[in-house]
Length: 519
Image 1 (tube, rainbow, N blue to C red):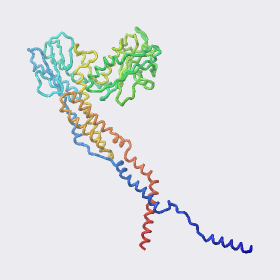
Image 2: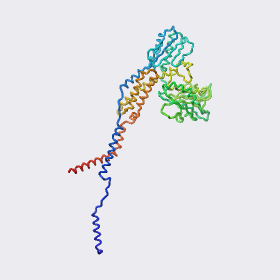
Image 3: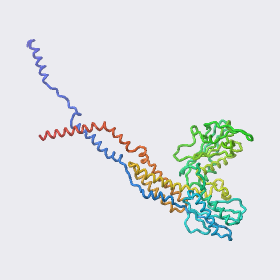
Image 4: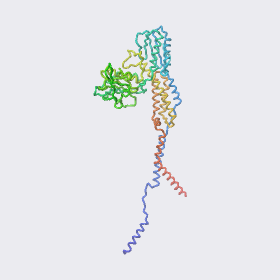
């Protein structure tokens, strides 16, 4: 072969190579079968989630017993606590029935003068054994021509010492005392110091030193005096409340203001706490007053020891411009404070006296009524650690029972109104169960045999009604209505459009292939 033939052979080889079409490898994601499987997997997940979405977004609205609720709201206004009072005149020549009739007339007049305070209290006065049903029964022993000063109570008994021998005068005086014992709040303005009822309270006792380095006190043996003075009173109040107690000592508790200095003729200068200072006395920003164990309301009791530069720190009457002899004051619905100036004549002289002040403040904050001025606790039962009679406890039970029943009825009515107003408001089994339990407790009150039982039913009714009203599902609907969830669905558009378009394309391809096969 000569050299002239080589270029010709080369051209032939190149022409042959151009005619060969290369074979491309198969790409899996371009396979129709794989693509359809992937699309089917996506749509399977979507369809499988539809029941879950339906269960999570559907609203359960169980029916509420509206008729029973409306009836019970009216019925609570008619609940009566029947109180029986047996009077023993201890004087044969006195007509007992006539005497009782005159006492009844006085009590009836009191009830008419303040019908709101007497609402729900039905008093039965008799001289012999009463045959009717009563929630509580009291005994009154009348002593005519007695030289004793004042009247004595112990338990549910009253020893009425009348200086007069005239039965009409004595009956009028006795009726007045009974009115004051049965409804102590009648014809009086509402006490703004009284805290709202709660079944559980925490009592926080704090020793606050303005500056421990400047004439302060490091301890106060709180446990000892809480046990001997406070706890016996709490035991008497146990039908109404459950109490937990905590105490602490703070070594640096500065005031948020500079107390003004006063002075005058006849007494030495002092630092005063007037009306304006009392409003800002508690330095919440710098004082740590109680732990956050739970959400129970807290009543605070502070023994504040001022620093040396602010002694003596006394209460000051802004109206008269004079200092007050009491070292203690109450912050309405919050607690009590004692300004302690060691050695000052206006300050408590012992720890027992300090905790006696705290006990008095506690009773005022809880709304425990005090005895009339001319009535005292009998000496043989007047334990200093428990200065309460059955008359006082029962009066408070009746008052709280009425407040709880009215509150429960109003709360149930509010639930019905709320559900009717908001069409998307869920009413689950838990809400309906609490509503039914509240109704059962309210319906059980009239048949209760004692004031304590009536109060217990009212407390449970209010608890169930409040729990239903503040149910998380219902609260969530109030703050985040169903309309807010519609905006979330727009976020699914970017993810759903490719699936929908691809599904439509696959359906069209399937239809074309099917048509081609038939032709």
